[in-house]
Length: 507
Image (cartoon, rainbow, N blue to C red; front, side):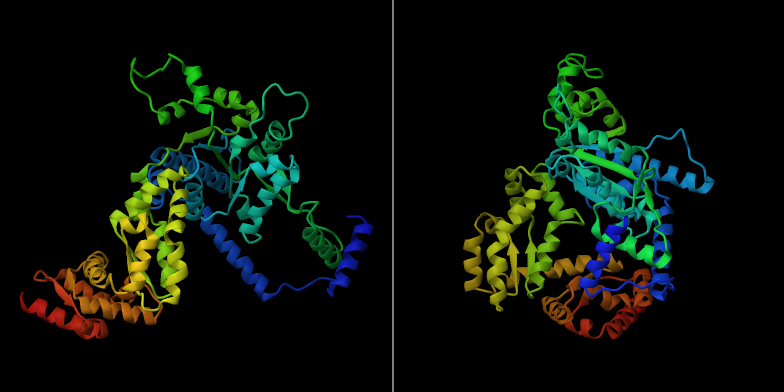
């Protein structure tokens, strides 16, 4: 930074009413606490002790289908971070190890991004996602790609060492495949690929971009307080790069190459698209428009399947990241509970398939279905709940008009749902069979609503304090079904005591 730039920054700061102190500054307690927190987070993330099967099991909770992708990702991630650990433990680099950057193939909405996000969350490393198209739209500028690495530092709350073990995910990578037989520099294709080569292999990225005004201001502050500017860099050696794209046209390239030489298949046997993508080779990606050096730095590639209506139904019903949880929270904010039947979820899934955007179509269908409900119901306090069935998804406006005319049209049915639901929840949570009266359901919902809590969460807290008594009931040979009434909810301790005495008297 030359004197003119320093003077300009000083002038800017003066005009903004800001002042920079001179001389060494003492580290505050807050800064020390922040360093301790960063160190703990880094140590936790780098204590990698997962097996591929454990990572896949975790992904199964959130992502439906894509078993091949889960296995490939889990194995590559384990290899990568076990190598990182070995290098840290021995303080030596394994020169024979080649970083397993990953290429995911598949249409939009099949869970590619969600897979990688959940892996990063499980491990505890920073994660950055961007679309490769933004680099091709404006022409390639080296700092743009390097900003992805700098963003890892931001996600790591300034901890450079933790950032150096993060994950960078680039979507729509197929859009930077350069056109072949071009003369001159192809800034929107091959130029971007060449610029990314050093990042995916190993390089040092300056922490501050030359075009970052805020970074230059911080540099000035360091210069004034320390008399020099410390040059910090981020190594990409241990950063895992994962790229993905739909790769329209790749299937035809693979088919053309394999022709009749379908090794491993019987003559006349039908080969589906997933099998064909599984036969992809580096030459296919080179034919698609990638440079050999670029695709060579992505040694692991796997295909993600298109999702059908049954898959989308399972996402709604079984995934821990189900969109329905979001809608439930949205309505609960206004004191309105919503229940989803299997038929309603299947109708949503079938409508989402027509959108041809994979799991993203569920959001489109959900917004179309519930748009008027979100707008109208908050102004109608008489409506406390409703049920999403197939006819509501098919004609949401007609069902909304009926609901507004009869706010309690679903009351008996919902109470029936909840007596079974809470009994099943209690059995699963505490291992004890109970029956739940409809009066208890209303009472539980009322008490949970006062605390702005979900009824199941409230039930968990209510009985979670009595672990010893619940254990006695689980261990009692004569234990049978117990009834949860409003009195039990109001006086859980006395009720448990009565259950225990009654159960053990039968022994």
